[in-house]
Image (cartoon, rainbow over all chains, first blue to last red; front, top):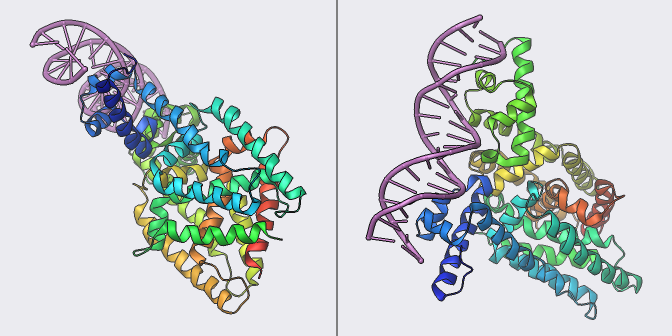
Length: 201
Length: 201
DNA sequence: GTCTATACTCTGATAGAC
DNA sequence: GTCTATCAGAGTATAGAC
């Protein structure tokens, strides 16, 4: 497989990854087939395997770029900003990620659900380190009495759980809400209230 | 396939479903193989198919019994009880379900994540109806000024999201917390505080 | 009721022409 | 670089002996 160099190679690699995201996020790794990905991508199956050495490699490429996107909103939480504003803004960014990148959210969720067989290292490394760093920031804010005292790590978990729910359980959310609802708009309202009450004291 | 009648048939059916829960919840439907299930169950592959007509049927049997278990904690929320106590108790029961039945939680999550291909009807029927009923109860409590006014459906979503997170993202939770933590005990504490603040006014 | 052997399909990957 | 054809292995399901 050639490292993407020319414009055409880059473009085809992108097309494949885009199609693969579609299929993997909907069916999981085992459920997805190269035939499906090839069809969505509008390429032949052997042509897929000209750009990537294996199905495994396509999946891996998706996961690698995923984690960074996923952690960016937390990275941006600024120790020098106003505590409540910063936590709220983080929640907002994470909710927008769910709204704008639901396929990525589901790909991530499926991976973790199945025990993170292809992401263990990243979870135990980068992700854990970042949460530890931000937990220290939150603890400082709590020590200064600027937000209510809470377990900082579980506070982060709560933001993950509440925002990702709307992407990962989309089918259920829409079924329960019925017609004429904008799940993410309503979630934004609800979570704003929730964290306002939780962080105040 | 015989409808389970004798004691042996019932016992073997149970053994198969137990093994299937193990494998399906860890690998998803496509990822699971009859070989794996047979091995966990300690039976031969054709013997599995003597008790159930197909892999599909085993999976279906699991899902059917699952939804009831899953909705029971919400069913028990009593319109005549004390509002804050009832919501708290519901959250507790749901968290205990995550702690005691993580495989069921993951089986459910995988199904919904993939668009609920084998559960759509139940989601749109029983589940939606139950949530609608309990949302009315919550709204009444809010009208009476006994809990803070919030979107009742999103309040239910929040309980689902926050409790299921600990089962579904178990690997991530444990990686981030590190050694020497009891995720569910800490979650219980955290969620108690969260809902106390959210529901009060 | 349970097993061994096997039929048949699907799917990931390769060969080789163009 | 892309395609057609095809192989090899995995996996669901069945046949039939015991």
